[in-house]
Structure formats: C-alpha cells, structure tokens
Image 1 (cartoon, one colour):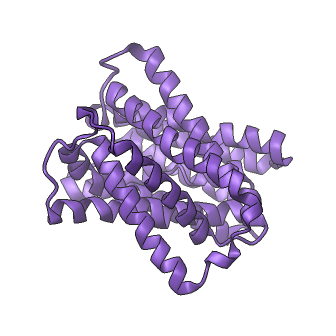
Image 2 (cartoon, helix red, strand yellow):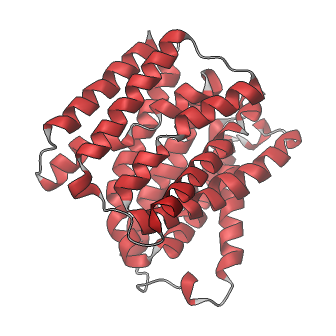
Length: 294
C-alpha cells in the first residue's frame, strides 16, 4: 500500500507551493544569493537542533558520506544556482514547465542505477499527472511568469534541465541511505548543514554579486526563514519519506504538484480565480495521482 508515502509526497508539494508564495517578497527584497544563504544557514541549524533532541544522528551510516557530499554539492548548491539563474533569465512559468522534466529524469536514473521498474498504471498515472501540471502552468502564463529575456531560450532550457538533473540526483543518490534506515529528517539536516557551510564560505568572497539588495532586518530575516523551513526542512524531508517507500520517479512526480497546488493558494491571497484550463490541469493532476495510488 503506497497511500502513506504518496500522501507524504503530496504534502511536500503543498509545502513547496505555500512556501513559494511566502518567499516571493523576501527573495525579491534580499536578492537570490542572500535569500538562499539565510535560508540554508538558519534551516540547517534548526534541523540540527531537532535531530539532536530526537536522537536521530545515530541513524546516519558513515559509509554513505560520499553520497551525501554529492547530494550537497550538486543537488542543493549547484542545482539551486542553476535554477535561480534559469528563473532570472526565463521567469517562473518557463522554469516550472521545464522542471517537470525532473520526474522522468529521476525515473530514468532510478531504472539504470537502482533497477526500479514502474508498473503500467504508475506510468499512466505519472503521465496524466505531468500533463495536468504542464497545462496548469501554461494556462497561467500571463500572471505567473515571462518569456526568456536574457541569454535566449536555449540557455534557459539548458539551465532548467541542468537544475532538474542535479536536484533529482541530489535526492536519488541518498535513497540507499534511506533504505538502510537513515531518518529522513537527519538526511535533510546533513544535506542542509553541508550546503549551509559551502554557501557561507562562498559568501566570504568580496563580490557585489553576493551582497544583499536590502539590509536584512529581524522581520525580513524571519520572513525568509519561514518558507525556507517549510521547503528545505518539512517538504524535502517528506519527499525523502516518499522516496524511501516507493519508486523514485513516482515520488518526484507527486512531489512536483506545487504548480497545481499554488492555484487555490494564490486565489485566496489575491482574489484572482484561475482560468478554466488551469482547473482542468488541476483535475488531470488529481486523476493521475489517483491512478498512481491504485
């Protein structure tokens, strides 16, 4: 029965959707690098305290440290930098559309690396879900994003696919550790601690590119940490729970529903109702999810 891991992946999507709405204003005010740095450092510290209190560090096997190192460097740091640059050049609609490729990419890597094979219903459900996500993103293009404005569409596509591959690799490579009994929260903490350390070292470089656009205030820092904890702490851990109990490609597909789940959140926040195609996309995503859960 995959109901529990499927629910974990869906909750991860909801967390990323709500976190993205909360993150928009502080990210715009601080700039991408400072926003990411504050989130990684603060959230890694919070998760480290939680894991220490709950005694979860013992679940981490030192034999998996090479996988954690790759996950930290490529999955979090380089994957996020590629995603941010794609977002800057192409806008959120184009980025979200191309990031839907993460699910089939992870499924393909899991097939060759871990020998995971999807059932026919899983493939059909994943396809319907991805179609719904794409339709929801495309139908909301006028309010959600812009066309590529710098560097051309080819560069944006390459950056987005790079982000999808690296982020997918970052999650997939730690699955053997999860199967060996590592606590998902501890895995998230290790990944964040490593990424927080790396980005703090990079921030020592005296470059204007690493300077905040606006002086951080306690209120602004708090508004930055909250969506970071929701995304890096809660949602990433939930997706790792899902990956530990179901095929990686399906888990990532269900964890990619944030573009659909953000629709009602934005409706409540802005009062602007999504158009009909967006709702059709949402219904297709729900149908695909139901097929996977059969």
